[in-house]
Amino acid sequence: MAESAENQLSELLELNNKILKEKDYDIVLSQILSYAQKISQSDGIFTYILNDDNFFSLEVTRIESLNIKKIGSDNISLYATIYLPELKNKPIKSMAESCAYNKEILNSANVFSAIDYDNKLFKRFETDLNYTVVSCLSLPIINRKGHVIAVIQFINAKDNYGKIISYNQEMQKQLQSITSLAGITIENRQLRASYNQLLESFIEVLARAIDAKSPYTGAHCQRVPVIARMLATAAVQQTTGPLKNFEMSRDDWYALNIASWLHDCGKITTPEYIVDKATKLETIYNRIHEIRDRFEILRRDAHIDYLKKRLANAESKEELQKEFIGKVKQLEDDFSFIARCNTGDTEVTEADILRLEKLTDIKFVRYFDRTLGLSWSEKENIKDMKAYKNPGYESLLQNRPDLISKGYNYGELYNLEIPKGTINKEEREKINEHIVVTIDMLKAIHFPKELSKVVEYAGAHHERVDGKGYPNGLTGAQMSVPAKIMAIADIFEALTASDRPYKEPKKLSEVLSIMKDMKNSGHIDPDLYHVFIENEIYKEYAEQYISPSQIDEVRPEDYF
Image (tube, rainbow, N blue to C red; front, side, top):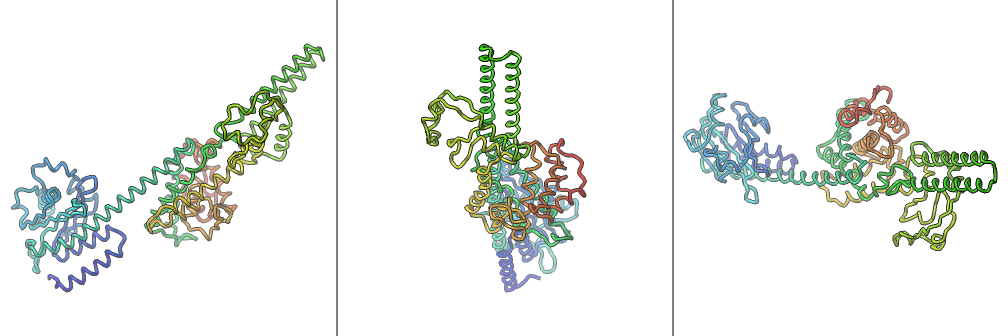
């Protein structure tokens, strides 16, 4: 039976409250359509959506008496998506197509008596399901800019006795009012989708720019989201253990995705030579060549000294040759040692440092003016200009004052004495600074409420669960699970990357051994690490993104 106006008003107010509280536009739209179908006592409803690209498609099909409810792509078998401008040349259009194309309301008491329309869809129901569409009301849904964004068709209105009747003018006005709510919902959904696409496109462009800044960082910003999503999915699915109650809302998933794309956005301020620093003496180029040239000078000096002594008959030829060969061998050995220290592959010991400092005592004569060809800023760093102009003795390895500039120490001996890796103290601080820059950049973006956790997730990927990380020294108890997921994702991608100039590609077993040590030393969260190994996330990722040459045999039980 038809409801009273009082009951309808009550239900409409209740629906309005649901609309205001519900965040999911699809649920809101479904509730509005259900209410419209109910008050009009329509047996069926078709909802067509016109997207921003002008493609017109059937999104929702609901027929109560047949218990049919199709959503999204399930409707393709009923109605093929069409490009709206193509309708111009279509001789006979369906009612829904005409409604959208001409922005007109179509109200038919008997659709098959309307010979000017293509009723192929309705005929298919009659042929395949023995269901006859009689009355049909097609309403165009128009947005605030005057563009059609949808068409809603109501079919087979029924009276209180179940008999199919036409849609009278009063009912048409009621449905127009109710579907206007659907129009607002559809428009908001499209605006939200456009906003998300814009935000995600901007984020992707920024992430790709960071990756493109260095030829060696590859697709780091693009791959960390993949690992983060895999690990988060596995963590949510835990039914036992410390993470059994861990859950993520739709907003949490979205925030994690955005954060994982933006986690390194601060690197846009990090100098390329630091990001790409493959050897200790590298700045814009590898300065080992300067030192090699000095060895060439020393060798040439040794050869000249040998020839002078031969001419002076200072000693026998054999003794002089032996002396010369010994000097050359020592020079070759010393240069090989310096070259080894430069690569950063092995740890520099105290004994190595003593040898480097002893080599500094070796001198060669510089005859040419060191100040020629310098920029004004380089000259500002020179304290004793006269000493640089006049010929003089210089050390084989140098820590000159002018090699300290703009907060960086380019001293050769200083850099060669780096114990591990290729990055010195000042460069490490600059690299660490990218996290602070990332946090500042993300705080400057006015994210919507549902993305309020982006800063937290992205800014914690270099924190450690033992509180020794940076920039805030957070402990595991102070970090959320998604933030700790970010840390593991960042580490695993960096360790498995095959394009870093400062390290050779590591085998998967080597990577997992390092991560096991990091788990044991309080670097990464042990519970998430356990999920990472137990669910073989490393294997799933490796099969898609890691070079086959890096994938070796791994037994999960060896890495718990």
